[in-house]
Image (cartoon, rainbow, N blue to C red):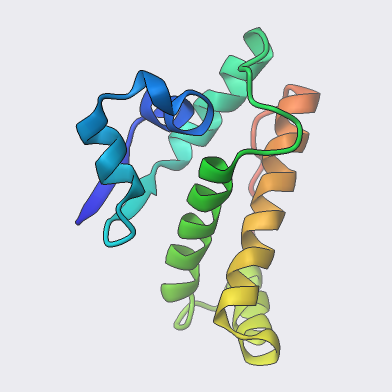
Length: 129
């Protein structure tokens, strides 16, 4: 089943899973489910971070890492027929390192972008080709 997480659910799952109802937590922990979230949620988290600390540790959180990896896998599955710079880089990376390592690399890249946006209190600036 595909589950689209809103911003609050994403934050609670990442930082305070005990705040979630047992049924919701079970759905999130079920590895058969595909967890999805909107880029708008990531943008909203950056804005919320600018208003004050969110309580997410610097060491990172397993749920956030998992969501970043799921998001990266979704991008990788859909980049094979695209010709933009990022898609071409990802296609070459999959050939060189394999699908899973490419997914982790993209998740890491996205995490660094989000961290920089939060620390500099800036919005995402997409490069136009």
